Image (cartoon, rainbow, N blue to C red):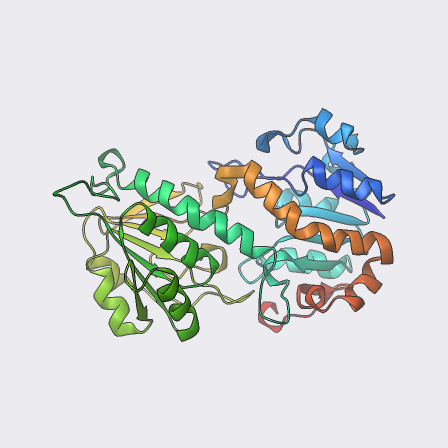
Length: 362
């Protein structure tokens, strides 16, 4: 089996994409099985991995994006190919990455279809128990990262409220509202409460809320059932609002309306981590110039689809840990048989030999 690792092309001019499809350690594991791995020169530089790191792991360097694609049976991406990459995608090739095709350009789906590609999205690989094995570690990263981001955006120089998340003796801490009690929301709740913020988390899953309640000693985190009334109530006093809503593969429902945003405190911060799949806040958007934060109605918005690229080395290790078992199966059995033997990979297929499998992207 031959794997190709092209250097990622940024989605936005202002935001570099520093993650890479596989770390040198992952390359070593594949090479030890007898696979060949070609990587584009400097593909891992943004994450702190040198060409020598990959070569020492047994990878073979190529000096053009075209060659990284064209030599490969399986192309390992982080994000969906950008328009300038479409011409490099080969016939009958398999591609893996966080593709989020529900919000991707229709032209990309057309390219995949015409090239009879098999396309597997990390965000829709799902085990029988509902777990998303590659999304989970990335969500954990985003949940922890949310504290760093919120703290910075709340600063006065960023037009935030000018408050500390933790407060100090005699001055109250920030009020943090989290929509979604999945991995990202749960990790964010633990992180914010750990530094002393007042945390409220909402979800429609009672079991998820009970789990958080139990782990928070029955009081450090307030749990609420997610409905229009409760959301409208809590956003009014939120200093920080975290969007952590996920329906695997599908467009995220809008839970926070523009009128709710208008009711928020001036200088409050919204971090919408659901933006990959449309966002759960009506005023969330990805700006054409790629600015990752902007202000609407006096509220600071952070809507960066590639947020974990801010900690690219950690994110690349997380991607590698999640995907290696599947790549080992590809090398052992071939793509087709590996998919047949692995139900969770089957759930991750967007297109099978060019045929669209997921109805919601047609």
